[in-house]
Length: 239
Image (cartoon, rainbow, N blue to C red; front, side, top):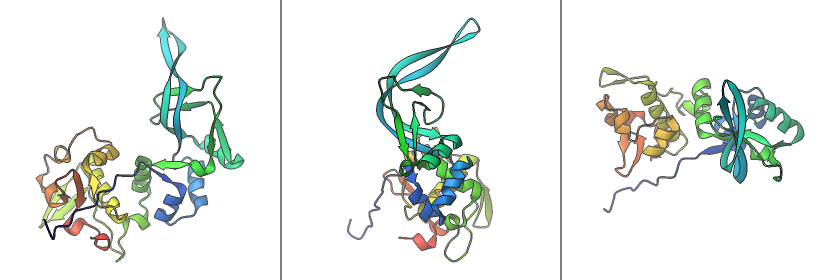
């Protein structure tokens, strides 16, 4: 219908390069590298589709035997602080053994395969890790409005004179929407939002089913995307 504004919903980002975070947090590249070296910020490397052995532990009468199962792996590999120390010292890192993104599986490359090589410019930080880091250290550059007013604390909100309290997962959803608005990406896909928050629910309405007031805080475009509305939307980013 003429006059209606159709929101342009970009997909959520899965990962961020050091340069992205450097500008988002207003810090130096060396500061981010130091956090990785100290294990404060978890770095990952992206791995293309390759053949690898998945290592399984088999319990045989109280003794553990390791078994190898040839399979394909593609995705992200977490890098420990020791990996980062070698990487920043040498400028590159070679791996033949690595863990899956969640660390629940271990893999080793076949003898016929070349080493997996990671360069310093290929380091990334996953979206969930960025969210965890920002929530823990409460970066002022990400969470303060241009007028110097602190954003709402989403554990509790005062709406029309009544205080409403929100659970941990509800707070994560609201915080993610607020962070997205500050980045200039207010409209977020609901399913992706739930995944980023670590929820196993399929809909936001299920997360907030005991908090009907959520519809006064979150706006839907009726096509699966959501954003904060009203006083909860950062004014400097309002469309």
